[in-house]
Image (tube, rainbow, N blue to C red):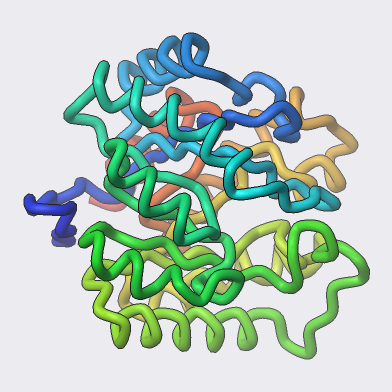
Length: 274
C-alpha cells in the first residue's frame, strides 16, 4: 500500500491508476488534449467521470524539437487552468507538468498537489528543495538532452541499465532533499529512438524493482506509430496494447489522453492478476 503526503493530508491511492493529460498549450502533439479554462473544465469533468485518479496540467510543450518558452508564458497558461480545476473539482488530485521550480511553487499555491518534472531536478536545480518545502509527491523523469535536442541521434550503450541507474540516483537525490514521496518515469520518447523505447518497456520490471511507483507515458506516441504506420489520432488501439504490457511489467500509473480505455485496461489487469 502506498501513502502520499499532499500538503497537510495523507492520501492513499489505489494503484495501478490513471493520470489524464490536459495541455494548456497550442502545440501539443495530440490536438484533443489541448485545452484552456473552459475546455479544460469540460475535459476534466469527462476524465474524472471516466475514472482518472490524477489530472496532469502542462503549460509548455515538450514534444521533440520544441523550444523552452519563458516562465511567465508557462504560468500564464497553466495557472488559470489549475485554479479553475481546483475550484470546480477540489477533491481531485492535480499535477503540474513543469521543470521549473518557480512554476511548481505557483501551481501548488493555486491548488496543484503533485509536481511532474521532465527534468528530474536537473534542468532547474531549485526544483528538489522547492518540492520538499511544498510537501507534495514528485515525479522524476529520465530524458537525454532537452526537448529541443533529445531526438537528435540519441545513443546509449545499454538503455535499460543507464535509465535505471539515472532514476535510482534521482530518487536518492529527491529523498536527500527532503521529498518524501517519489514516483519514477523512464521517459518513453524523451531522448530515445523506437528500439530504445521497446527495450525500456521490456525492462520495466527492473526499474519497478527500485521500489518506487512507476509512471509510464506511452499514449499515442511515435513508438506506436512507427511500427503501425499510424498517426497519433489513430493510435488508441496500439496505446492500449502497450498499456497492457506496461501494467503486466509493473507500471503503477498510466499517463494518458484516453482515460476511459486506460481505466478499463487497469480493471482487466487487476482481475487477471487477482
